Image (cartoon, rainbow, N blue to C red; front, top):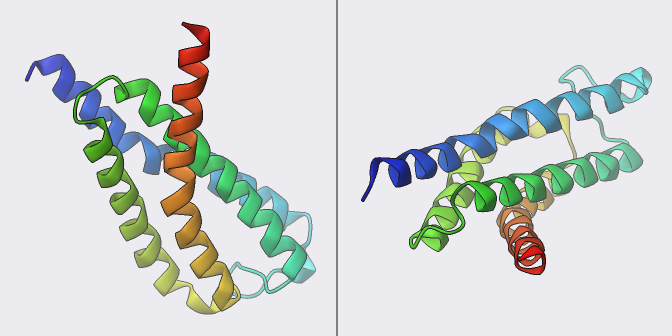
Length: 136
């Protein structure tokens, strides 16, 4: 395996959590800042409309993450394994964080978020693959 392949795979592995942190966290924070009375002392909300809006932000961000890892390493022979590893990585990070803030959001949110990770990253990758194939 070439050094370039190793570098691309490494960047593909570390980019989703970084990208998620750079996009989703500030966007969610800006959304919640618009409704300070709905934010609880843990920094979350139990307002259903806001939680659904947060889910949409998370879904879009996770799809972007999937697209980015495809554009970084999608042509690699081990891409499907790499993608599965990234999904597991993001799920492990999410579980660790969500357990710490379990009471900040409704219980259903946590399970929707986990599902979004499992579905959103592959969906973003698939869309990036289709976009790339139509451009070729």
